[in-house]
Length: 120
Image (cartoon, rainbow, N blue to C red):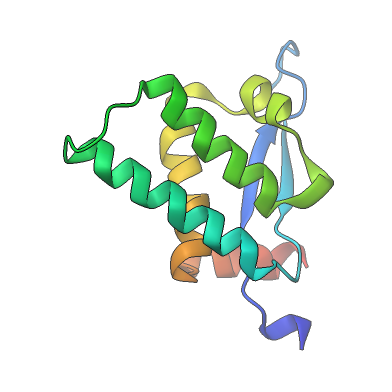
């Protein structure tokens, strides 16, 4: 059954101070509890309210909410500090949103599917 469950991944820099950058890949657990989805939906709803002007929230607060959901998605594999210090900043917002969208929509793109198959 585990081969049929959709998974996602996130890549963080192993050592941000190293001369040569190497990425460490984290896979989502085989099973992600439904309550993680509930949290992701709440965050997406809040962010939509910010985008439409119904709610005010600083960009930093938005990032923190996304990071909190991503940490829950990956269980005990990584921490909020890991994401803040090891996720490449120019890609951060897009990467975090894709992680939350994966949980909320259950969508796994072909590139992700192929990558996970190649390392499994």
